[in-house]
Image (tube, rainbow, N blue to C red):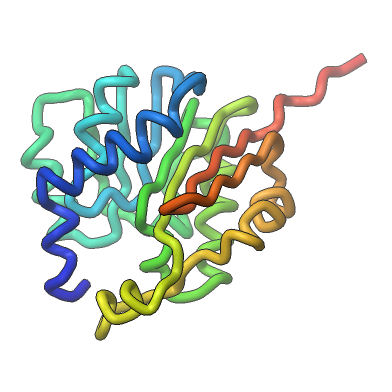
Length: 191
């Protein structure tokens, strides 16, 4: 990531994320006991999320960011692991909920984004919820990400992408940012 991303580690960024994204996005959503946070980076959402679940597992690709975050939350209910979200090292049906916040646009290809979304679906328990947000594409953000991966999510395609992967009850909202909720289907009952 380029040096502009220092902003994402600021208390102001975390506060804005809590007020504008996390609080409204999680209203009326049951996160359960065990949540997966994908791509926490500096942990702008981590501190807020950890107070809403019994245990939070944060999977971060960048080893330096993961180490910093692990040190920050040592001795708490947060487990930070270094890993690739396109190949999550947890069994099927592990987590009650999952979330990713302002990170999908850093994934270099749509194919890899879809692989991450599919992996999140795989590790969610039946009925589990996936919540997330990302920025809306703009010239300003394109320049902000100069020298960095910048692959913004097309809001018009996200519903179809999540539904095609198998999520149900998909809701995509676009305002100053993109936010979404989607559920892994409940297991089919045997008659």
